[in-house]
Image 1 (cartoon, one colour):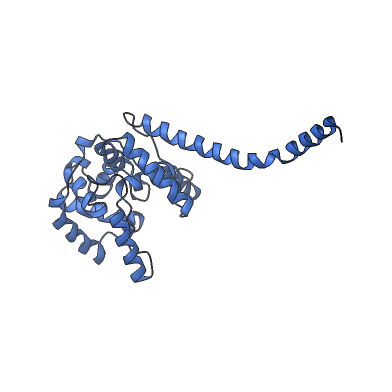
Image 2 (cartoon, helix red, strand yellow):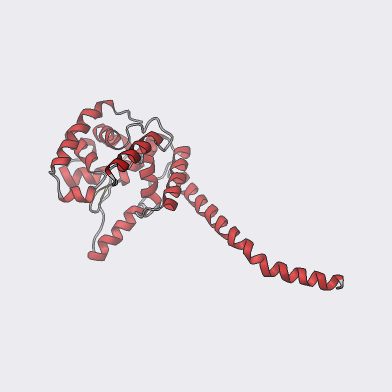
Length: 243
Protein backbone atom coordinates (compact mmCIF):
# COMPACT_ATOMS: atom_id res chain seq x y z
CA UNK A 1 0.00 0.00 0.00
CA UNK A 2 1.39 3.38 -0.98
CA UNK A 3 2.14 6.09 1.51
CA UNK A 4 -0.66 8.22 0.04
CA UNK A 5 -3.28 5.54 0.61
CA UNK A 6 -2.07 4.95 4.17
CA UNK A 7 -2.30 8.66 4.89
CA UNK A 8 -5.80 8.86 3.46
CA UNK A 9 -6.97 5.91 5.56
CA UNK A 10 -5.38 7.42 8.67
CA UNK A 11 -7.12 10.72 7.95
CA UNK A 12 -10.49 9.03 7.52
CA UNK A 13 -9.95 7.07 10.74
CA UNK A 14 -9.03 10.24 12.61
CA UNK A 15 -12.12 12.09 11.42
CA UNK A 16 -14.27 9.05 12.14
CA UNK A 17 -13.22 8.89 15.81
CA UNK A 18 -12.42 12.55 16.38
CA UNK A 19 -15.96 13.24 17.59
CA UNK A 20 -15.34 10.96 20.58
CA UNK A 21 -12.94 13.41 22.20
CA UNK A 22 -15.57 16.13 21.89
CA UNK A 23 -17.86 14.04 24.08
CA UNK A 24 -15.39 14.82 26.86
CA UNK A 25 -14.22 18.28 25.81
CA UNK A 26 -17.66 19.90 25.40
CA UNK A 27 -18.97 18.97 28.90
CA UNK A 28 -15.70 20.11 30.49
CA UNK A 29 -15.86 23.44 28.63
CA UNK A 30 -19.51 23.88 29.60
CA UNK A 31 -18.66 23.16 33.24
CA UNK A 32 -15.83 25.71 33.21
CA UNK A 33 -18.05 28.37 31.61
CA UNK A 34 -20.77 27.83 34.21
CA UNK A 35 -18.27 28.08 37.08
CA UNK A 36 -16.83 31.25 35.56
CA UNK A 37 -20.34 32.73 35.42
CA UNK A 38 -20.91 31.92 39.10
CA UNK A 39 -17.50 33.35 40.02
CA UNK A 40 -18.07 36.63 38.16
CA UNK A 41 -21.58 36.99 39.55
CA UNK A 42 -20.34 36.53 43.12
CA UNK A 43 -17.50 38.98 42.46
CA UNK A 44 -20.08 41.55 41.28
CA UNK A 45 -22.15 41.02 44.42
CA UNK A 46 -19.24 41.92 46.68
CA UNK A 47 -20.43 45.54 46.46
CA UNK A 48 -23.70 45.27 44.49
CA UNK A 49 -26.91 43.85 45.92
CA UNK A 50 -28.64 40.99 44.07
CA UNK A 51 -32.04 42.06 42.77
CA UNK A 52 -33.38 38.51 43.01
CA UNK A 53 -32.22 34.92 43.40
CA UNK A 54 -32.86 31.65 41.57
CA UNK A 55 -34.98 30.46 44.48
CA UNK A 56 -37.04 33.68 44.55
CA UNK A 57 -37.71 33.41 40.81
CA UNK A 58 -38.67 29.75 41.16
CA UNK A 59 -41.13 30.52 43.97
CA UNK A 60 -42.60 33.47 42.08
CA UNK A 61 -43.24 31.17 39.10
CA UNK A 62 -45.06 28.72 41.39
CA UNK A 63 -47.19 31.50 42.88
CA UNK A 64 -48.03 32.90 39.45
CA UNK A 65 -49.17 29.51 38.22
CA UNK A 66 -52.02 29.86 40.73
CA UNK A 67 -52.39 33.63 40.52
CA UNK A 68 -50.90 35.48 37.53
CA UNK A 69 -50.86 38.70 39.57
CA UNK A 70 -48.88 37.23 42.46
CA UNK A 71 -45.73 39.00 43.60
CA UNK A 72 -43.08 38.44 46.21
CA UNK A 73 -42.37 40.78 49.10
CA UNK A 74 -38.75 41.76 49.63
CA UNK A 75 -37.09 45.01 50.64
CA UNK A 76 -33.32 45.24 50.85
CA UNK A 77 -31.94 46.78 54.05
CA UNK A 78 -28.24 47.17 54.94
CA UNK A 79 -26.63 45.02 57.60
CA UNK A 80 -26.67 47.73 60.28
CA UNK A 81 -30.43 48.20 59.88
CA UNK A 82 -31.20 44.59 60.78
CA UNK A 83 -31.68 43.83 64.46
CA UNK A 84 -28.77 42.07 66.14
CA UNK A 85 -31.47 39.99 67.82
CA UNK A 86 -32.33 38.42 64.47
CA UNK A 87 -28.68 37.94 63.55
CA UNK A 88 -27.94 36.16 66.82
CA UNK A 89 -31.12 34.08 66.60
CA UNK A 90 -30.39 32.85 63.09
CA UNK A 91 -26.79 31.96 63.92
CA UNK A 92 -27.93 30.17 67.09
CA UNK A 93 -30.59 28.26 65.16
CA UNK A 94 -28.98 27.63 61.78
CA UNK A 95 -25.19 27.77 62.05
CA UNK A 96 -23.57 28.21 65.46
CA UNK A 97 -20.05 28.09 63.99
CA UNK A 98 -20.72 30.53 61.13
CA UNK A 99 -17.98 32.96 62.15
CA UNK A 100 -15.38 30.19 62.43
CA UNK A 101 -15.83 27.71 59.58
CA UNK A 102 -14.74 28.20 55.96
CA UNK A 103 -18.12 27.56 54.41
CA UNK A 104 -18.85 23.95 55.37
CA UNK A 105 -19.20 22.70 58.93
CA UNK A 106 -18.11 19.10 58.50
CA UNK A 107 -18.72 18.31 62.17
CA UNK A 108 -22.32 19.52 61.91
CA UNK A 109 -22.79 17.47 58.73
CA UNK A 110 -21.54 14.36 60.54
CA UNK A 111 -23.92 14.96 63.45
CA UNK A 112 -26.81 15.51 61.04
CA UNK A 113 -25.97 12.28 59.22
CA UNK A 114 -25.88 10.33 62.48
CA UNK A 115 -29.17 11.85 63.65
CA UNK A 116 -30.88 11.11 60.33
CA UNK A 117 -29.54 7.53 60.32
CA UNK A 118 -30.84 6.99 63.84
CA UNK A 119 -34.31 8.35 63.00
CA UNK A 120 -34.24 6.70 59.53
CA UNK A 121 -35.49 9.95 58.01
CA UNK A 122 -34.19 13.46 57.38
CA UNK A 123 -34.62 15.39 60.63
CA UNK A 124 -31.45 17.51 60.43
CA UNK A 125 -29.69 19.23 57.54
CA UNK A 126 -26.29 20.40 58.66
CA UNK A 127 -26.02 23.02 55.91
CA UNK A 128 -24.29 26.24 56.89
CA UNK A 129 -25.58 29.74 56.25
CA UNK A 130 -23.11 30.02 53.35
CA UNK A 131 -24.35 26.75 51.83
CA UNK A 132 -27.95 27.88 52.13
CA UNK A 133 -27.05 31.16 50.44
CA UNK A 134 -25.23 29.34 47.62
CA UNK A 135 -28.33 27.24 46.96
CA UNK A 136 -30.72 30.20 47.16
CA UNK A 137 -28.67 32.41 44.85
CA UNK A 138 -28.11 29.99 41.99
CA UNK A 139 -29.73 26.56 42.34
CA UNK A 140 -33.13 24.91 42.24
CA UNK A 141 -34.82 23.24 45.17
CA UNK A 142 -34.21 19.75 43.75
CA UNK A 143 -31.88 17.36 45.56
CA UNK A 144 -29.13 15.36 43.90
CA UNK A 145 -25.44 14.64 44.39
CA UNK A 146 -24.63 16.79 41.33
CA UNK A 147 -26.53 19.74 42.76
CA UNK A 148 -24.89 19.24 46.17
CA UNK A 149 -21.47 19.21 44.52
CA UNK A 150 -22.24 22.46 42.72
CA UNK A 151 -23.49 23.93 45.98
CA UNK A 152 -20.15 23.17 47.63
CA UNK A 153 -18.21 24.81 44.80
CA UNK A 154 -20.31 27.97 45.04
CA UNK A 155 -20.00 27.91 48.82
CA UNK A 156 -16.22 28.03 48.64
CA UNK A 157 -16.39 30.78 46.00
CA UNK A 158 -18.54 32.87 48.36
CA UNK A 159 -16.19 32.32 51.27
CA UNK A 160 -13.12 33.11 49.13
CA UNK A 161 -14.46 36.32 47.61
CA UNK A 162 -16.62 37.78 50.37
CA UNK A 163 -16.25 38.76 53.99
CA UNK A 164 -18.44 36.87 56.46
CA UNK A 165 -20.48 39.98 57.18
CA UNK A 166 -21.28 40.45 53.49
CA UNK A 167 -22.32 36.81 53.14
CA UNK A 168 -24.61 37.20 56.15
CA UNK A 169 -26.00 40.52 54.91
CA UNK A 170 -27.05 38.97 51.59
CA UNK A 171 -28.46 35.91 53.35
CA UNK A 172 -30.56 38.05 55.69
CA UNK A 173 -32.02 39.91 52.72
CA UNK A 174 -32.89 36.96 50.48
CA UNK A 175 -33.75 34.03 52.77
CA UNK A 176 -37.37 32.80 52.60
CA UNK A 177 -39.55 33.53 55.65
CA UNK A 178 -42.95 32.51 54.30
CA UNK A 179 -45.10 32.26 51.19
CA UNK A 180 -43.71 34.99 48.95
CA UNK A 181 -41.88 36.59 51.91
CA UNK A 182 -38.13 37.07 51.47
CA UNK A 183 -35.64 38.88 53.64
CA UNK A 184 -35.63 40.25 57.17
CA UNK A 185 -37.48 43.50 56.42
CA UNK A 186 -40.40 41.83 54.63
CA UNK A 187 -40.61 39.18 57.37
CA UNK A 188 -40.64 41.73 60.19
CA UNK A 189 -43.40 43.69 58.45
CA UNK A 190 -45.40 40.58 57.57
CA UNK A 191 -45.40 38.91 60.98
CA UNK A 192 -44.98 41.77 63.47
CA UNK A 193 -45.63 45.05 61.62
CA UNK A 194 -42.25 46.43 62.65
CA UNK A 195 -39.01 47.10 60.77
CA UNK A 196 -36.15 44.60 60.70
CA UNK A 197 -34.29 46.95 63.04
CA UNK A 198 -37.11 46.84 65.59
CA UNK A 199 -37.41 43.08 66.14
CA UNK A 200 -37.40 42.02 69.80
CA UNK A 201 -35.50 38.99 71.06
CA UNK A 202 -38.64 36.83 71.17
CA UNK A 203 -39.78 37.92 67.70
CA UNK A 204 -36.34 37.30 66.25
CA UNK A 205 -36.06 33.86 67.84
CA UNK A 206 -39.41 32.80 66.43
CA UNK A 207 -38.52 33.99 62.92
CA UNK A 208 -35.24 32.07 63.07
CA UNK A 209 -37.02 28.88 64.11
CA UNK A 210 -39.38 29.19 61.13
CA UNK A 211 -36.56 29.12 58.58
CA UNK A 212 -36.34 25.36 57.93
CA UNK A 213 -40.02 25.28 56.89
CA UNK A 214 -41.21 28.88 56.51
CA UNK A 215 -44.28 28.33 54.33
CA UNK A 216 -45.68 25.81 56.81
CA UNK A 217 -45.09 28.09 59.78
CA UNK A 218 -46.56 31.03 57.89
CA UNK A 219 -49.83 29.08 58.05
CA UNK A 220 -49.25 27.53 61.51
CA UNK A 221 -47.73 30.22 63.70
CA UNK A 222 -48.41 28.78 67.14
CA UNK A 223 -47.47 25.10 67.10
CA UNK A 224 -46.06 23.39 70.16
CA UNK A 225 -42.76 22.66 68.42
CA UNK A 226 -42.38 26.25 67.25
CA UNK A 227 -42.87 27.57 70.78
CA UNK A 228 -40.53 25.01 72.39
CA UNK A 229 -37.81 25.57 69.82
CA UNK A 230 -38.15 29.34 70.17
CA UNK A 231 -37.47 29.00 73.91
CA UNK A 232 -34.32 26.99 73.15
CA UNK A 233 -33.02 29.60 70.70
CA UNK A 234 -33.73 32.41 73.16
CA UNK A 235 -31.38 30.69 75.62
CA UNK A 236 -28.68 30.22 72.99
CA UNK A 237 -28.74 33.69 71.46
CA UNK A 238 -26.39 35.23 74.02
CA UNK A 239 -23.57 32.91 72.93
CA UNK A 240 -23.98 33.58 69.20
CA UNK A 241 -20.94 35.27 67.65
CA UNK A 242 -21.73 37.87 65.01
CA UNK A 243 -19.43 38.46 62.04
